[in-house]
Length: 439
Image (cartoon, rainbow, N blue to C red; front, side, top):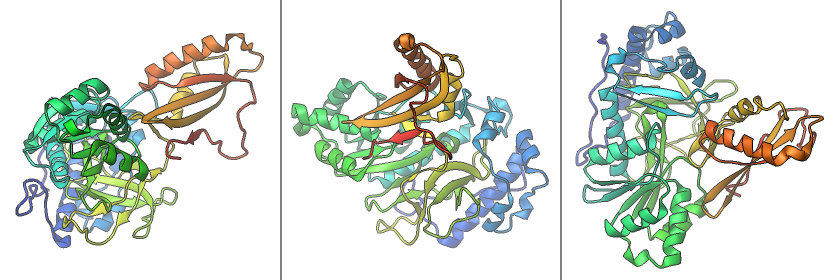
């Protein structure tokens, strides 16, 4: 739907194919125009946004500081609008949906128009260019396909970029190793865990001499510096890169680090970012850690207005040695809520509580322990047996619960039933998760 507001066409820096170059003033003008357009577009096309935004008007946004006058959008808004939340175009213009895990049984579903898909591809192509790839490279995609955005994003961007795409998906280690050799793959996109597992197999079988792999792009999970160094050595890499992304903002490719590895450049002409104190909801001081809040600047189907990502990071000031003028944020330092990323799947403890409610044999207390052995993550879920329930059926109960939990989370956990009162208690908020993966 047309409005009096518009956003400028995507710009490309001289000598580049996808990466832009703006002066600070020009970038701010583009962001301001994008915020006004997004607000007008949402008010025009979305009853859900009209109810939320009240008497807000694009003309009220005179500077970027005025964005703070607008209300936040949260995962609750996505749940409330299920199955097509925040939809701001006629549903006949929706070409695709992707989804990620939500805080309940309903997933966060985001819709895409043709222009949204094109922007998604352009966003990922920028990441490939910043990572130093050329159309002569061969990209092996080892992330998930289907409802998840990862596989589609990596492939879309590679095709837009013009490099050979080898779409395999996660797992299938033997096939990946074979294709790395047969096709002369030069870059792989995967989780750091999978890259480490692959590196160990390469080392075990003496395959490094057969590989042309030089770069890797990691997403979906945290990785330590030691882990990245081990991967680089075992696979003979020149560089490995961390990529940012979220389904709400197209998918992977919202940001990526460059060869300087001093923070992730984010595409500030596609979304405007704030970093706030998650308690006070006020902006933090420059360089301080806070929660990332994003406003999309050209999303059509499901625009975002001050969306609380719950991701914790900080802005990195100053110019990057690589010469890219796009601003930077630090690697994600955690979340302001209690989300767990386990084997590439987003999990909330609330989802586990939902499954517990189905079992009268269980009490309400539980504890999650996350560990890593080699390249593989493991989850141990301890559940308290209900009072006056016999321990004779513990094994069968744990098995039934593990199967239902797998259906709910799309991830497997080992389940152990313990006696009532066995798990720690607290006068304050109980610590439900112990994450030992990066120890």
